[in-house]
Amino acid sequence: AQGFRFSVSTLLFESGLEDSHEISNDVFVELAEKDLHTLYAISNEAFSSNNRYSNDEFLKDSNQEIHRKWIQNSVNGYADYSFGYIDNGLIAGFGTLHLHKDHTSIGLLAVNLQHRRSGIASRIISYLKQVSLTEGRNRIISATESCNCSAINTYLKNKFFIYEACSSSSCLVDLDEEPPHSVNKDALAIVLQVAKSLNAEIVDEIQVMRKI
Image (cartoon, rainbow, N blue to C red; front, top):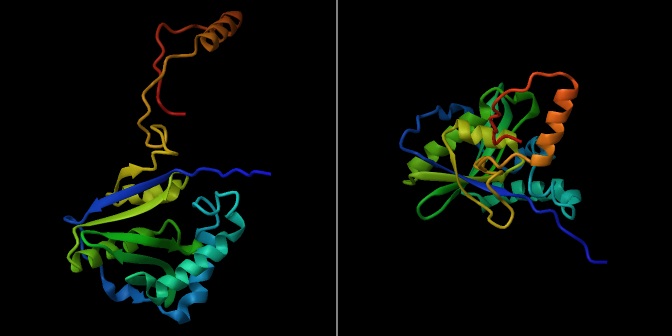
């Protein structure tokens, strides 16, 4: 029987590097083969949901293995830079960076579950920006899924902006730019009927918002 595939909207983020501030490299180390087991543990938690593989009906069972292979390849040279953030002597998070002709791109970005909401992701991003500047690039990009609210908030907080989305599976709702639509007249009539039956006070004006 012919199967089907869930479509996941991918958002691309970009940030300029003009206002990047320096961050101490004392807390960062270059990753190596000996770090793989630690990175796998962080990955299992960080990429268990809300990514292009976990949300794909046909790839979700391979999600963990795909990310492990991605990490291994990155550490072994697929990424131009692979850095771990050290806290109390242990890797608390990591990020990978790829160099391109006129920009850099973030490949992987993950933080240990116990260190979430402590600003480590932002510090990793700042360090990757700093490395990008050192390499003579003036912008950095990254991609994430429109359902990954945590990643989106992190990038927006770090002065990234959405500059492109997959046109085949994204719409204005994904980009939070959908304009207000007319009120459903049947629904409005029902609401007014119920309000009158309850002797409720009906307001003169309704302001429709875009939020869903």
